Image 1 (spheres, rainbow, N blue to C red):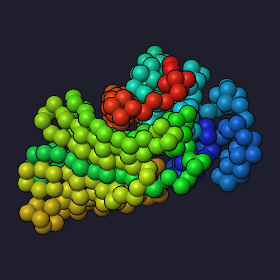
Image 2 (image 1 turned 45 degrees about the vertical axis):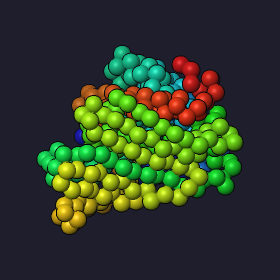
Image 3 (image 1 turned 90 degrees about the vertical axis):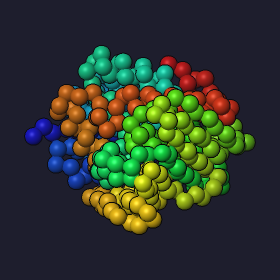
Image 4 (image 1 turned 120 degrees about the horizontal axis):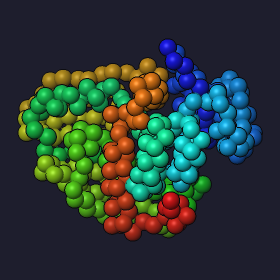
Amino acid sequence: MQKFNWGVIGPGNIANTFAKAIAASTKGKILAVASRSKERAAEFAKTYDIEKTYSDYEQMLADPDIDIIYIATPHNFHYQQAKMCLEAGKHVLVEKPSTVNAEQMQTLVELAQSKKLLLQEALWSRFMPSLSQLRQLLNEGIIGDIQYIQSEIGFAFQNRDKSRMVKAELAGGSLLDLGIYSITVSQFFLQEHPDTVSAMGQLTEQQVDGHVLANMHYPSGRFAQFTCSMLAQTSNTMRIVGTEGYVNLPACFWDTDKAEVFCDDKLIQTIDIPHPINGFEYQIEQSMLCIEQNKLCSDLMSHHDSVEVLRVMDTIRKKIGVQFPQEIEAL
C-alpha cells in the first residue's frame, strides 16, 4: 500500500478538523505544517504530533518527503498558494472555494494537467457516501422525476467583526463561504449546470453579501433555489422535490449523514451513514486514491464541476454588485 506524507498550509480551525480526520488514516499522515506564524505552526505540530514545521511556504514545498499539500487558508490566498504548490510538483487538496473566481480555477486546472498532478477542491459534501447513495436512488426514480431543489444556509455572523467573512479583501460574504454548498449539492443531484441564474442580495457596510437569494434554471427544465446568509440563522435544510415524492436533508444538509425519502407524505426510506470521524476523512482518502490511480481529480468533484460552480458564483456576485479587490481576483 502506498503511503502519503501531507503538508498543511494554514493551521487554523478547518485544518484542525482535517488533522483529526487524517489521524485515523492507514496510508496518510501529516508530515509538516507551514504558517507565517512560527508560534501557530509549533502549536499545531505539538497538538497533532507533526514532525516538521515551516514559517516559509517555499521551504516546505522544497521538502522532497512531502507528497501532497492541504491548503486551509482564507479564500483570497488559495489561487496563489495552489499555483505555488503545483509549480513545485506537489499534489494539492485546496479548501473550498478552490479560488475566488472561475478564471483562476481554470488556470490552475490547466497547470495541474500539464504537470499531471492532482488538483482537488476540498468540497467535503461531494464525497459523503450518504449523498452518493441518495443520488443513485434519485437516478433510479425513487421520487419520480426531480422538478426542483430548495435549500437555505445561514448563520448570524454579524457580531463577529474580526471574522474573515465580513472582509472583502479576504473574499468574504455569505456566497463563497455558505452558498457554495447549495450550488454544488444541487448540481451533484441534478448532474448538470445551470444555463440561467438570477439573484438578489443585501450588501453589508463592508460591501460583501450579507444575504443572497438565487434561482437557477437548468437545461433539462429543472430548477434550484437557495438562500444564504451571514446575518440570519436559517433552517440549514435542503428539499428535493419530484413528481412522486420528495427528499428532506436535515440540518446541516452539507454535512449530513442522513436523508429521508417521502412519497404521499409517508416516509418510505431513510439513508443513515454516520461519519466514522468528522466527514473530512472521505475527501482525504479519495484524494490519495486518485493519486494512486493517476487521476488528476475525483469524479465526485471534477475540475469541470469546480469551474462551473465558481462560474455561477461569479454571475451572482456580478448581479448583486459584490466586487473584491482586483489583486485577489487577478491571475
